[in-house]
Image 1 (cartoon, helix red, strand yellow):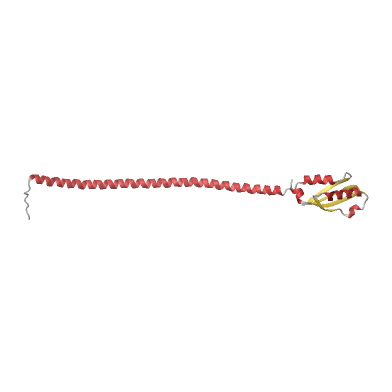
Image 2: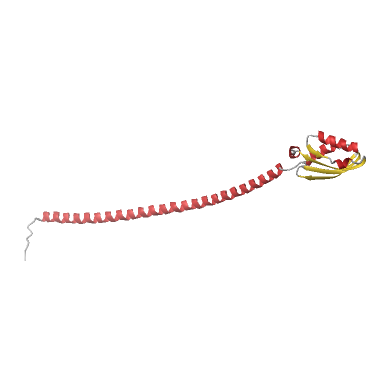
Length: 184
């Protein structure tokens, strides 16, 4: 066993005791500072995670609204393409439309007064009409008038129609030029 004698003066003992207390205070300060740093680090970390989650949630919301806008745009694009196809169909029908009024007015001006038309039949750009002429000369006059008209071609008046001299029943076949009935 060892025995220790304290030969230090009282003032030194007080200094040593103060130094010991100072060391304890420094250790506790370091511990408290470390805990405070860890606590604030934890708080800032949680704040950062929450702000990231908020940003992701708002981005998802924006993406969903963008997706809804995209769907709306896609819907209207589909509707526009449907309407455009319908318009093109109507346009193609209108361009293929045959305007018979101008043709019939030319036909009327070519028919002499003593010739009556009893029936008209069309097939594509061919015209067949039947009727009765008072004389053979009236029928030939009709044929000549039709040949003078620029819209008619390949006029066919069968010779069998020219047998009778009076009250001639006839049939005339002719073709119509497409540009005469396609343009309004």
